Image 1 (cartoon, rainbow, N blue to C red):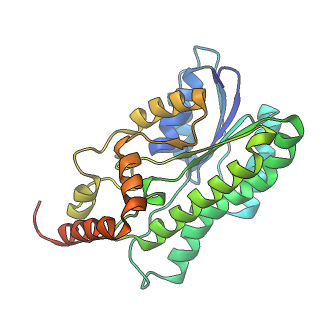
Image 2 (image 1 turned 135 degrees about the horizontal axis):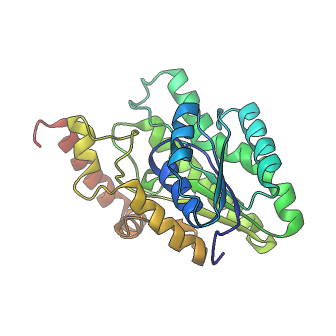
Image 3 (image 1 turned 135 degrees about the vertical axis):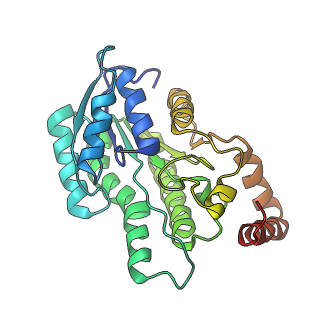
Length: 265
């Protein structure tokens, strides 16, 4: 897709962070955008900040993009507003910390929002997309899906599952006109990892970027259709190193874990 002007786009988790930056950029480029978020007030605030001077339009449909009935209501509402949905950004995500001791609810919530939200959206989108021979799904996965995130097993594990589902969709339906892209940034300064505590700040690191920079990279990637969207290009090298020498990579990640547990800044 060379331009999003006139396209009908849904952005989940659009009330803040990467989702908000994507929504603003799409509208500024002339797209017709549905912003979805659990927080209706936040979504309305983002909608009010969008620049519609280039012909873009924005609508808010609040609700839970992780729940089955929430996804159904969102897609039905988006179709009523947009007609065809050209691009669906499954961007909503949550980051629950801990390991096996994390609660059953934390694991269930992570699975629903980080994985099943993508599955449930695809279930409803695929029929019309395959019938017309085109459709575009962008899954916000995180570099955690390709690598790992220390200190947050529910997040790390479900992001691995999300990349697996995106890969499966692409290999199964690419020749039928479906474009699937996985957005995999490392540190981004959002409400998910705000950097307002020592561990978050160390995890984000000096290379953390702003959501607007992620939106810039997404716009470039939409044009060329690449599967992996990497706002931090070094993730590709890390991913290759992980596959080439898993033991060395795990040793390095163990050192990172020890650094995060230390008192050093």
